[in-house]
Image 1 (cartoon, chains in turn orange, cyan):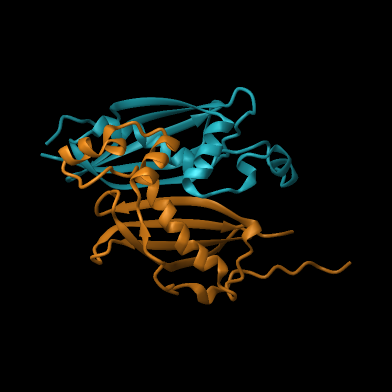
Image 2: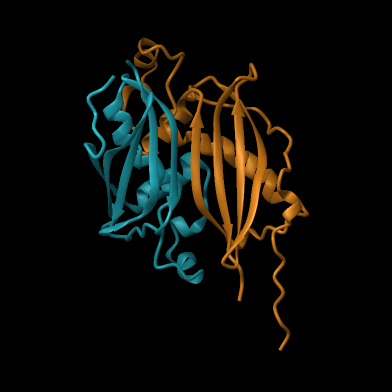
Length: 154
Length: 135
């Protein structure tokens, strides 16, 4: 019987910086829609007047909204031809957000993904991807860090 | 700066997730992986049932802390490990509970630890929120 050979994740990916994603314009209705989906009920997430009264320019996105922007960065990683990543074996292991400020409607956000670490652990490969998200003035808003686990095969 | 003590329970929360919640989150987030709404697909890849998006669980779990904090502080960091899947029954759904406690007080940053459970099992590990409370 032929032995299955698993292609591991390309270790040379570590340190690779992907090009900036196409700017994402955060819409007010998208913030409201996402807020409903994560059970965020604060007026800051839904009511522009309440948000302005609290010092924001428009409705505030919930803390995990940055995942939508991160996704565009991860799409570049997963589409790259030489990574050895098999999407069907990928599990989301960990997620972290580090904030400079909260995202608000009207922000135009660009993400730059860097693969910061590739580790093998117990037959699995762990890929850590850090996505730095900045606004249209180039100022940092939030960094989204994902650990993707690629399960080994038998 | 604050009268918080390590171990103090700050707030709890409870959310019932149904298939409707999953479809709504799929649309809002753009994550249309069918394991989050199709029993046949979930079964074909060996899952115990249709699962909630990990990012949905992460997203709802922080809300009690955000509500507790209000305008008294700023969010600095939020991270979790996805340790167990949240199976969402097609009829009754599943209830996710959150308990937020003070985990550590580190100079000007307060670490709040979340215990997030569904069906009597914790589903997120190392679920930590760091906030900077105003003086």
